[in-house]
Image 1 (cartoon, one colour):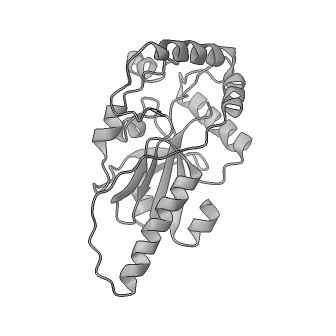
Image 2 (cartoon, rainbow over the protein chains, first blue to last red):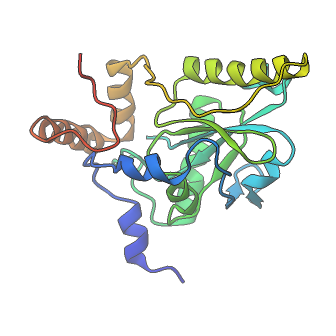
Image 3 (cartoon, rainbow over the protein chains, first blue to last red):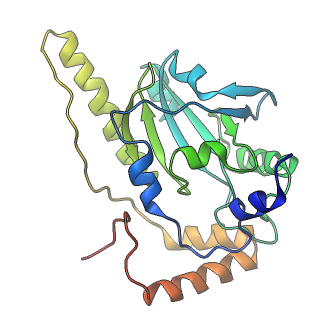
Length: 67
Length: 167
């Protein structure tokens, strides 16, 4: 059971534009191993790991949202 | 571009994260079903053919990779990160992938190549009208919040880690 505060903290309802660029700079540098994660494949509704993709081929991953 | 590089062994995927500019029409996610619904709308509106991976509600994948709204990462087969950017620009991505593929071709021709670390400043073409249209589609609140944030930003020092326009 994830706590509501964590959900509302991440999913801000007001854009303020104060993104921290330092996490990007420091977390996954080029040359390092891509961290794996599980996400839901929209097409099927089933869980999928990112590693399933890079085990078979190169992967270009774009992060984003509708807005 | 995804189709062009698919034949060269590069799979393009999209990771659906939190709403960058929530508004009345597309508010901040409060349930996973809502996030899925937004992702479906995104797929339909922009006719996205790439697989869409929807991140969990607390942004696990998004945070792992740096939490920025529109990052790109190129991960070589086997899992090594070969390129990444803090924004998504198609031209830049094309250059980067071609660089990787060319390097491999040279190696296959017999050249001994050693990897090294490099960085560069990217430039992306930015269409303000299109961007405002996108905000309006999210809702008036998205438009207002962005305007307010821009006003505030003018009075603040540059943020660490962010490439600022200096010219």
